[in-house]
Every structure is written in C-alpha cells, then in structure tokens.
Image (tube, rainbow, N blue to C red; front, side, top):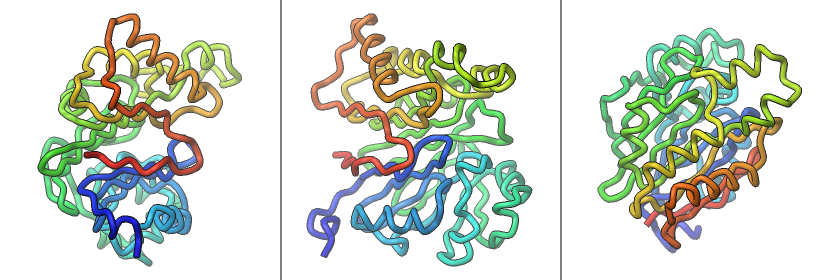
Length: 275
C-alpha cells in the first residue's frame, strides 16, 4: 500500500526534471494526475513516478507547453505504449509532427486546446495561457481544483498580461528563473545565442522573475518554485539569492509557511503537497 493510499491528498506536485536537459512535472491528487511536458524518457518518467508512489496508469494525459525537444522527447512511447492523450495547441502539435524524434507518435491521441478556454482533466480545471517564446503557440498552464491552483510558466522571455493574470490568481507559482544576467553576458555562449536567451522570445532571468514575484506576492501563495534553471548561466543559490534580495529591497515579507525552492535539474524534486 502506497503513502498516497494511506494519506490521500487533493493536490500535489513533483518536478520529475527541470531544465534544458529535460522538463516534466506531475500535478495531481492521490488517485490520478497530469504530466506537464514530457522531455525525459518514458522509462525515466515511469520510474520517477514510482519513487513517489504513483503509476503510469494514474496519468490521464500530458499537457505540452511547446514543441522544443526538452519538452516532448517521450511522446512517441507515451502515446503508443501507454495510450496517453496529448493536450496542446494546434501550432505546438504541428511542431511535434515536424520533429524527427516525435513525428511517428500516435496521432489519434492528440487533443487540441486553445489558450484562454478552460477544460476538465483528471478532476482539475485546466486553462492554457500564451507565453512569449520562440516556438509557435507556446503556452503555460493554470491548473485548479475547487480550492487551490497551480500556475506553471516556463520558457518565456517576458511575462505578458495573460501569463501575469494566471500567475496572480494561483497559490503555487512554478516560474522560470533561467539565467543570471551577468553570468550569461560574460559566459561562453556565442553572441547569437546570448541574444536569443536574453530576448523577449527567449527565457526569463532571475531579476525579472524575482521582480514579478515581489510585486505580486500575497499570503495566499503557498509555494514559489523556480524552474528551468540554466546549467551554464545560473545556480540555485544565485536564483534564490536574487529572489531574497529583491524581496528585501521592496520590503516584502513572505509568510513563514510559504515554501521557496529552486527546482533541481536532471533529477526529481521533493513531492510538494498543497493544502
């Protein structure tokens, strides 16, 4: 008997992997749930879910943010072997079918969605919102049950109004804090790649993520989870230090109950229970 059976919860979250080497998140209850992105192998997804007391049979679908390989790698096996439906925008689906890793997935498993149009999945209300990234129809997700909600905004150069509105009404913020500006600008990336990462269609830096959090923090926020940290241009300590300094500078005090983490790259996080 698993811990999830002994101690059922209504909302929990685990990052199975976060970063350019692969992104995948579990959001669900004790009995069922959703994957957001599938950028690691299907085998690793299965094994990591088992580590937290869950099985693939409890997954009701996969939400895809965009079609870059670090978000879609496992889709062929997930659709063919595990028969998991894939929820994404039409533009993202076209990109998935153009990718040599995923072009031969089971197309019958596609479930189209539109940003701003809520739908039900695994007992949750799911709403996609558009984000600013260099992929066609890229989105983030707001996922809610009757009492709590999670907003996941990863791979975005700026926080536009649609993303900001969903983040502001969430209890759990999973927000990109990809790079430290000084590390990026002084680092080894070629100039063209630096410009891409730093641009409005690229990634969110520590300073901008921390500024948004500081400006919109409220006591109803139970978790602040910084995601998609760069291995080359960031560290967990830098991301968290920037957040602490920004909060202090703006005179914002977090509730002692608010959980703050930088999600690890290449391995799973702890299992966060949202009460």
